[in-house]
Length: 237
Image (cartoon, rainbow, N blue to C red):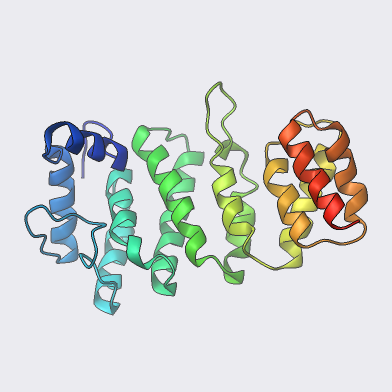
């Protein structure tokens, strides 16, 4: 499915607020996805509204078929929106895993389009609702992908969204991964992942972590992170 410009939720809402009518291009993409999924949308009804899409087995299979076709980011983004009421369900979470893998792969390959950025943001934030121990390897991969942290002025830290899911997983490998980030960044203070790693270490505290977080509390150039590290130290002292 082709597109001439970015269509995202913010764009849709802005258009609705301005004119009271959906963006014609949004309607076209939505209508095609509805046809692919066998969903009948009533007038004024959109994916993401309550009960528009119920992810029973047949619908999950049709969603899988859409993903297998590797459609444009705008279509995948609309599919994420369509599944909004069911992010916590395992079959839906599996679909989000596949969308996440495809989206990150395209990002790493160089796709930085507005639709791709919106999809990367949406799928990573939706992912945390169903994140569990079985997702650890995938999350460690995403949390270790440097291109997800943009290094230009005003860039976005997409990696931090995947850390929100990692924080839900109680596994020593997740905490050890975060300890490694902090240890490697100590004295350099150039790794944005330290902001996400410090609270995760604080939740799985070991006595040796005091020596790891003390330099963060004393030396890190960001005052808010220094205070966060100090609160953790105080809590466990």
